[in-house]
Amino acid sequence: MVMVKNMKKKKHTLKKRYRRLILYIIIASIVITLTVHFVKVYKYHQTDEYKLLEKGYNANTVSNVISSLTKEDINTLLNKDKISNLNDIIKEKYFLERHLFDYIDYSDENKDKSLSDVIAIINVGANKPWYTDSTQTDESKKTAMLVNKFHLLSNNYDAGEIKNFSATYAYGSVRATKEVYDAFIKMANDAKKDNVTLVLSSGYREHDYQEKIYSDIVKKNGQEYADKYAAKPGSSEHETGLALDILSTGEGAFTNNFHKTNAYAWLQEHASEYGFILRYPEGKEYLTGYSPESWHYRYLGPELASKVKSEGITYDEYYAFYLE
Ligand SMILES: [Zn+2]
Image 1: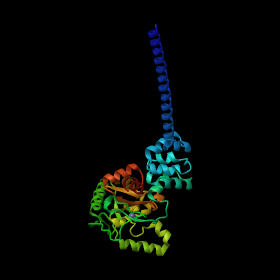
Image 2 (image 1 turned 180 degrees about the vertical axis):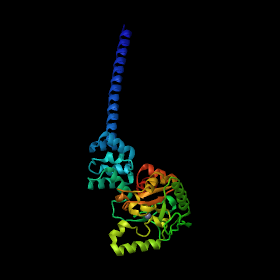
Image 3 (image 1 turned 45 degrees about the horizontal axis):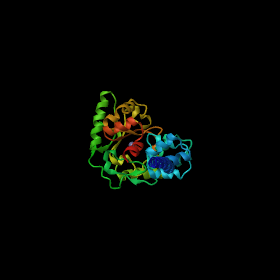
Image 4 (image 1 turned 180 degrees about the horizontal axis):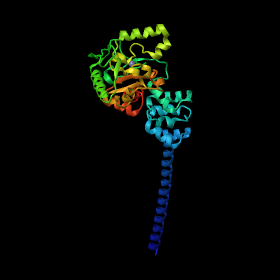
């Protein structure tokens, strides 16, 4: 009898212990779950995603910012007020992260300009006055090198082998590098088959000659005029031997009329196949620094010229985005 009673008591104690254990496990689980949850929340609050959302950026912008910008730039953004057009800037086709804060400032100061213009202007550096912060261009890029008012040739630039065009192809003495010479002859001969006459008026110019042209214009019309219509020595593509001024015959023998000729129309269609692009198109003066020149063609080689043509942007923009 006593034994049975003892056994019952033991069983009861075991049950009690068992229950307590379960209770402890439940409490422990709750504590762990809550801790994990709070750690998670705390950790999430430290993320860029949370901080950007807190700044007022929407989820789409936040995901674009995180996937396209460096940690460093995100930190800078977090220290600034919310930028209303941030997502639009990042999504621009020619967006370059290295210019992010310049785009932001420039678009804020120039609300009349479209975002694609803002991107293009900053990319080529045309937010600064011409010739500001000019650097020596990367001459090792050869036929792809950029020469403009911000990218200058060195004083002792060597254009390599230079050839003279015969009177069939040029008004007066016109020269170019051998590669450009060969490309133009082929182009002019093919144009002829389409009853189009291409005649050169200018090509390679030595540095000293460019210096003389420029200083003559400065003397005659002043610095501002000269900077608009002529190139400062070192900034002219003609010094590379890779640029040609192409005209035609008759009315088309004059630069003022060249854009109305069928020679110009033919070049618009075919020049890139021979490696040439129109370098200073109409309406792009604010990017190239030059008034439109329907006669000035730059040799880039057929592959690059076709790429630039299909992008439909100036070479300054193309270079900044793809090659710099
Ligand atoms: Zn020219």
